Image (cartoon, rainbow, N blue to C red):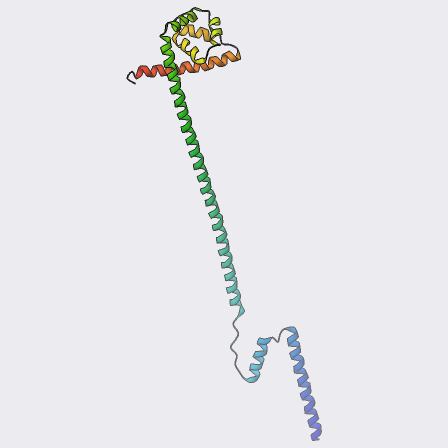
Length: 216
């Protein structure tokens, strides 16, 4: 009788052991019996009290906030880089425009000086021709051109330098000078006429200035 009871107890222990082993294997296979749960089971078996694990939700939220903050910092850096490049480009453009304006101003100053030099040389030539006008030969030629037919005078003027033509025309009566200039009709003659008329205009301006400033 005693042996039968012992066999029954041994059979029950073997069955319980197999059931426990199967339960543990199932838990490991399905992930339901992970390290944390095993520690809880063992602690419960030993009569200990485990501190409940920290919820992972807060950690996930902290990680998400850190990620968002990192993304905002990266976006801010990109915007700052873009703004910095735009400012640098505007500065370079302003410097280029300043340099271009300075070059243009220098060129303008050079052109003004050149024109002043030409005007001074032209005034000097006019003074020479005015002195020449006082000479008998010039006066005789002037009288001949004034009495000559305008077409014939034009033919002689086409052979002269522009300065010399201006010297004669400036000493003629306006209607006589106009009659001669009207005979300039071919392209070459018209080109010479334009140059002569411009010089006459300058001569009149210089002469007028001399009258307005007699002490100069």
